[in-house]
Each structure stands twice: as C-alpha cells, then as structure tokens.
Length: 190
Image (cartoon, rainbow, N blue to C red; front, side, top):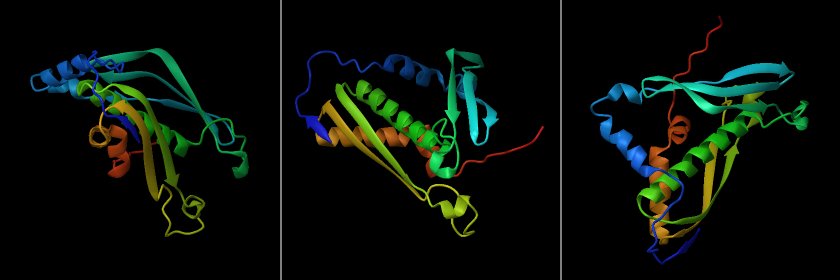
C-alpha cells in the first residue's frame, strides 16, 4: 500500500457523483420503496460447459430500467477441466464481482472524503477444494473455503486513511455481504 501524505488543495474528482448518491440516500426515509431493486441476467447454454449471459434490464427506483447497452459474458471451464475455455469460470466471475464492488466503494468513499486516488489495484484469490464440487468427498463444501483481497492503493492520504477507505468499502459492499453471509437462493423449473 503506497500513500502520499500530502493533501491536495485542488477539488478531488475520482469520477464518482457523490452528491447524487447522497441525494438518493436523503430521500429514502420518505420513499423507501425506491430502494427495492431486482437485478437480472439471462443465461443461455451454448455447448458443453459453455454458457452466455446477458444483462440489460433491472428494476429500481420504482420502475423498470434499461442499461445503456446490453452486456454479454461467456462462462466456461478451462482446458484442464476437459472443457473448451470459452470464458472465465463462474467462480472467477464471483471474484470479478467482489473486486468491482469493493473498488467502486473505495472510489466513492474517497470522493466523499476528498481523497484523490492515483491508482487502485486489487488482487483477489479464492481457495477452492474440488473434492466437494466433483463429489469425491461429501465433507468438503462445493464453494470457496476462503477468499483473500489484497489492495495496492496510491492516494493523497495517510496509510490510516487508506485503511479506513478499504474498511468502509467492505462494510458497504453488497457482493462482500453476499459472500460473507448466507443468502437464500430459490431454484425452480418452469
């Protein structure tokens, strides 16, 4: 973790519209229904372990919303798993989601605290024992046994201020919360 100990006199712009975020937070007590979101993706099987997901709509702020473009993601398993390696594995997407959520939080909180960021890099690693997912040992869970996030941050802030940014980002991260706490998942077949 690298930090520059001098504060900047120029207005900080890390690319986050904190005023808009705080504006939404301010109106939530009077309109709690706008905080109810539903995120969506459609996933289509391509072949073998290869699938393609699309993300283009969600529900939030009291109405159906559309992203400015449709996003597509291919997922597959690597050649070492006797697959075709046509995309990142689903578990790697979980790590991407965690890193994206935490890093967005760091940028938002730094903006709110008037801390200029110069660079932020996260390395995220997950331990995963395949005995579980392959059914070789029923006592081993299918998912991760642990996840480690390591940041290198260069900012106009003290090391303590940078640690506080990371801690607050972790506290407010939806993806961190989903990984750290059980989430009810319902699966049905139509």
